[in-house]
Image 1: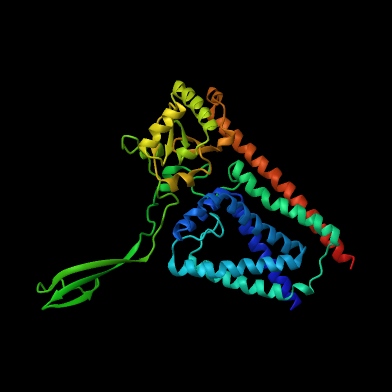
Image 2 (image 1 turned 60 degrees about the vertical axis):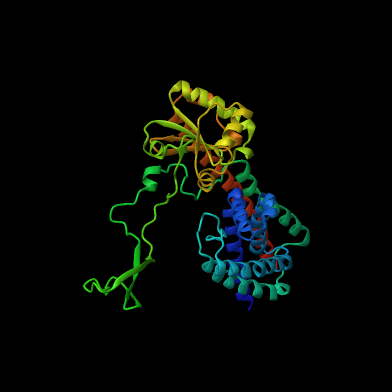
Length: 410
């Protein structure tokens, strides 16, 4: 039983750490998913809490996983993981039965699971949580009591770090189809020879007042006395689905400009402000400066929003914005960049770089080589991510060494 306890402890730790981390690096994505749930269950009064709840849930999952991994405050960790699974397992059963939201979002955008797949996964982890809970008193921590509190404090800080980074900057790992380096045309295309959707069609015919159903193999095409009534097609096997299926933008006048962005040559700045009433006004001033410089340099610049024409007019009147607006679906715009507003640099349909509202570039960026500048920024982002990862790994190694030292001393 002790061996099984350790197996399930580490299994739960791995799942909770992974789930908490991949959602934590994208807290706005988690907040949007909370919003979907509240809308589906008619709990709209909770919408203002979605960001706070996203921070708490992601940090809680990561914190519980780290406690289980390092074996500190095991009784608290065992109670937490059991209550967590006891709450979410029946919830995912309800989601599987009624399917109000197609993707549970339990692993963010990193891994997509169906609601039934999520429920069966949770059944396994609920069983593991029960076993860990029942054996919690038999576990002796590797750390002394005072050291445990130091470790708990460090782990708690580590648990909130990914969410704060992802909220005040862009996610350090981008699992969405609009990540840097993606060519929009290629991501929207269906390769030659890719499997297509397969459907089964049922035809209903009537003869002498009697209705009968047929399929493609036996419908009475040679007997003209049968009268066609209806047909229904059911998807039997899904074919290839490109990574991007919903990218579409129109001008305020209603003209489709999608092709210009996807297949257009040269540089283009595309800002995303999915809701103008929630857009940072300080960032708008920066966008205005960028727009004027882009216009002088002959570079395309536009702002895409899901707000209506009246909201756009009111926004222009309030802020004095000079840049042209495009209109698109709110979910699509939220998926493109996790910032309101956010900014993309596109060249020949390829996303070169993305900026959060908190670190928009100066307009002087257009005086140099935009491609070289974007490449430099991408390298700096990778370097920052490497440093972050190294610091995190060193901290984890230090905690692990304390655990091994305590274990060997027994």
